Image 1 (cartoon, rainbow, N blue to C red):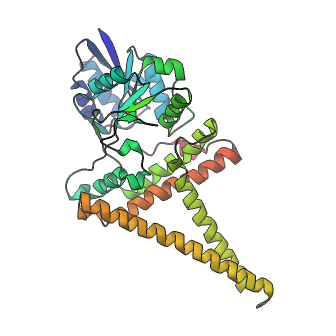
Image 2 (spheres, helix red, strand yellow; image 1 turned 180 degrees about the vertical axis):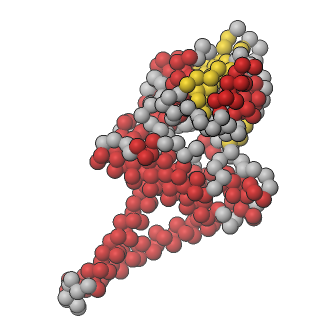
Image 3 (cartoon, rainbow, N blue to C red; image 1 turned 30 degrees about the horizontal axis):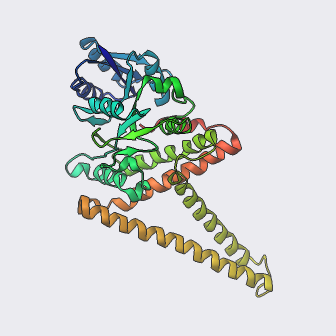
Length: 365
């Protein structure tokens, strides 16, 4: 009997862990394959461990491991170290899986011989009035204009990609490219996929590998989450000397350029109105023209972005439901500005301080 190992990092998932275990237990595997499920708990203090331990007692296929590092990369590696399977599938507690999810991962790997296979990243929100914000967050998440054209959000795409949602690997992938980088709180999957690409490996996305992800349910949580994503991306780029994709750079460049123009405009205003330069002198006139140019660029950037956000919001609301429209602009800004601010701080810490800030070492969920 061949074994497929499911690996799962978790922390503080009391309200979700049992439903997740039931969904994994219901997976239908191809004939000749057996399932083992390794769940690395990051020292949960909310009752997750007790509920998970009780489940493991009732189903010997499930094993709870300790993850003293608490973060995702450490949990994944503890699972990989214990995994007995020749094929390894990563799952997330906040995702619902098609009954043949694991079977389709196996089929795609066997058909393509890729080093990592996975499906598209499909997001949904809860039904009803209380789920409106989460549905808006999911709709924005799915939009190619918000996500920068990432193929992982294209539900119909079939082919090679730079990254996939979650992922599944033949054991040889980890023997060839190594395990996950435990210095990264976020982006450990992107870094690992970049390592696979640089080493000549292949990553394949199949629309037949189906799952549904439930995102954060508040705009503030989205902002914090993407600020953390943005923060850790420069550490990945510094390690490999390149970005996995151009879209990872755009939010940081956008926020930084806006901030520079704003500070410059304020500084010029102070110089001109505090008498630091003689009024109507050649220097004063030159600085006045510079200020006008800076203000023009600042307004152009702000208006262009604001109009773009409104148009994207209207397009999403037309397709996904007009009740989402009032939330979409602030959600899109939270995605972009959160990621951009995180990227700027990440570049400072990666290049100037030379080490990450411990404040960004705590997961946002």
